Image 1 (tube, rainbow, N blue to C red):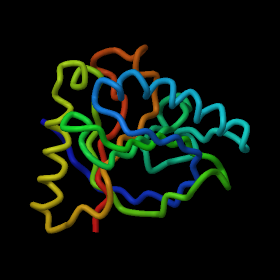
Image 2: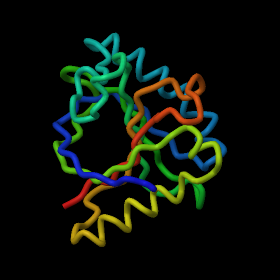
Image 3: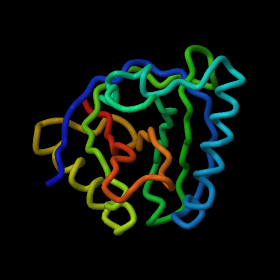
Image 4: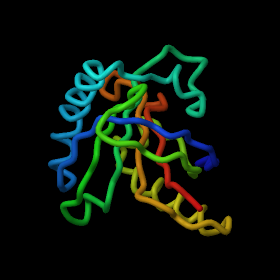
Length: 163
């Protein structure tokens, strides 16, 4: 059973890379984009990690870098702009405003079994059923090394900013 929760996300300063991709291109591009924005974040004052963002509820685990991938559409349906962000203490390319979001934790096994689309649908349906509206593009917030994770490891959150 998928647990969907709400959280308040503080303002985040990020360095970014944007590309319009379909699903196959996304899978090839995303790891390199994360590495590039991580390097730029380190050069811009430091790449923030899970210890810096208590709202992620990862304090019981080792500190790991945080990345946000924002989807302006569904890359399974057509090429869509995707923005990969690495969080930094200040400055960066832009600021993601503080917001509230509905989210669900995702395991690697769920992703590799092809069930990720169902998570997006469930979160969006939950938002509507609970009297809220989707306020901005959905996103995935990553905090772990996906390739090294085991199938039952939580690897990222699927989140929708809500109002």
